[in-house]
Length: 306
Length: 274
Image 1 (cartoon, one colour):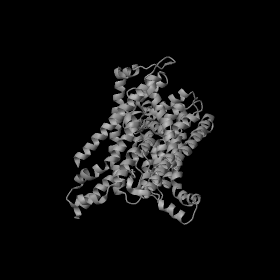
Image 2: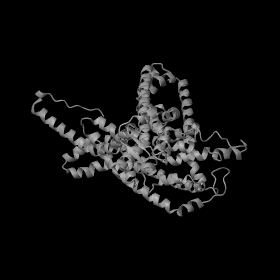
Image 3: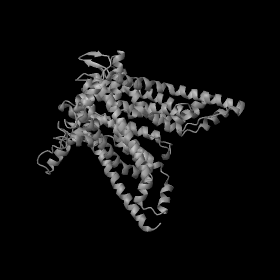
């Protein structure tokens, strides 16, 4: 997807002018073809996001919206401890989820990319299939599994392993992490698999011939070359999980409430859309900043290895 | 190559194979809970299993709200699938066949909904709908779903269009076929599997989507929103499990079909970049 700038020197004559005209019309046709999709994305995403930014600078008392500019919502977001705690908790939980999911998925992707010779397609379908079943029901089935009278507790009790149900299984950050690590597995496996599959196998042979053992070879060649996949996977998991409110409200309990639950509450029960907007926008900005910083660190880390 | 590193390689490979099986178990066991307990004759989801029963499935038939929600979800999903796939075709063709200024930023913008939390997409749309003065309906849900589905449609179709050899079309034109017949006899058959798999994929995404639908749905609910409302009542639990099982089977069939179509004829090294 590289842009070939068709540069034409003025001395190129009529042929050059012809090429320029063709290039221009090609550019025009390309843009025209792209425009319906761009229009929808701008109208349904960019404009609403700008409106949300506008709302975050407004204020609301009961049902009347005051559209005069104010920074009150943002000072609230910055100064109130509850938002800090929830934001930090969300980022920590999502960070752990990302780390756990990527670490668990990497060997799996490695296995499919390097060890599976024949039925690659079958493995890929098997690995992505659970992802396409209802998110709501996948989260819900963890609630059923980890619950007080749930599958694990009742199973262990009927086997006589435990006398009373284990209470630490559900309604805490741990259950949120397990559920999310399960729900987002496919988003980790696929990008990592794609980047592993792209690695030129002759590089690995060269490393072996030049005396690198399997471990050294992995850290000096395979891992750095698969970093784009790891980074893509981390982003695809970290960013959406910070904004998830289904999982915390089903399996999180009070200890697992995340920032998205508070944002959602501002748009329903608490009915303070401007504050909700300010919370949503600051969360999005902070998450983007954290994501960019981690990408930068990951790239520097990889460069250091090589 | 000496014998020793080779045997170490096989040992490592065996470890990874074992890990892969465990990983699959981690992925599938939680999902298999739904079908197993949907046939269990007890209102509680717990061991030991009681008698086998199909009464929870029979109970589903007596819930008119469920069928309304199902019909709504089908409408929204079909609309979202057709519309986002159409937009995906435009974008994929523009990306692969033409060069134009700001191509990469335009592409990034189209793929952006993938990395914005769904809650923010949903809430900002809610704000806009509210500002314009539209009332919440299946249309507002559909708009949100089209936005969410477009990046997936583009990703699927791009892999099809990238593998497309342009000289085939040129050859057809040189040999005297009209532009229309060239499209119909050359372009369409090559791109067709990609279109079908994009339709199936986006249909499934929209059909299962909850977060955006939760904010943008009006009095007519979609199926996931209906399920969400049912989760509050413990006595409804077994029938939710039965419903979940049916959805599981339907999703599985659709996705196997989509994957099979998408990957048919594409080399493993020509995977789309996510």
